[in-house]
Length: 262
Ligand SMILES: O=C(O)c1ccccc1NCC(=O)[C@H](O)[C@H](O)COP(=O)(O)O
Image (cartoon, rainbow, N blue to C red):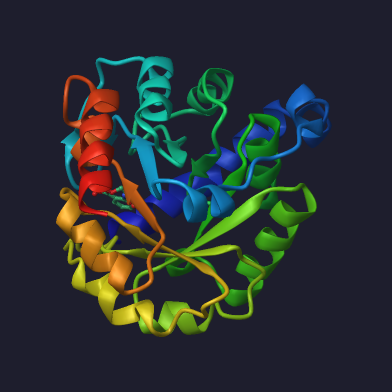
């Protein structure tokens, strides 16, 4: 069983337990359920394009940074000029939580993406209840029907969808889904191999009306300049910032440099 299968198997068990502890009605009674969401897609098109990620650890890199509190990290990202924030909420493999999402919501006024392995509508309701503006759907673990259902659920709650693909087959099964953005993950989520070429290879297959986002393995501004030529307007960056003692400062330096080469 590969790591992605393990994550999904654990996620299914986690969701069943959570459903028994926190009923849907309790999620729907969250004050954040009535909140009008911010548009990540618009923020990417009109801003720096950087989605700065809060990630304590990962299967490919193990511990990245467990010493900082999420409020300081995301506030620093907003101050640096990020267009959006990505918050990992998976606990077992990434050290994240829904509480991280709630703290992030309380700390910034820019769009927040719930970075999670979504397989059940319950998780979409959680995302709304804890303050997310957008959810991630990963084509590698979902059928077209599941993506359609979950995307429509998110949209009905006013959230946007970032639909993540890694190859042409995943992209083709995603083209009819009601999404706002297509993310190309440069990381193979099974082998952990990372190649920016993946974003370049798939860019021409992504419909022009969708915002293109390149994810993973981005560590310098020249890569951004190259990917913009291929039509990318969003760039999801985690480790490059989180591996430092001050991710917000690292993001500020990165975005300042980006502006100087624009
Ligand atoms: O990062 C991993 O090891 C990983 C393994 C399995 C599934 C997902 C994984 N990462 C999630 C991401 O896609 C990244 O956190 C995100 O794209 C940022 O990547 P990076 O800038 O390389 O930290």
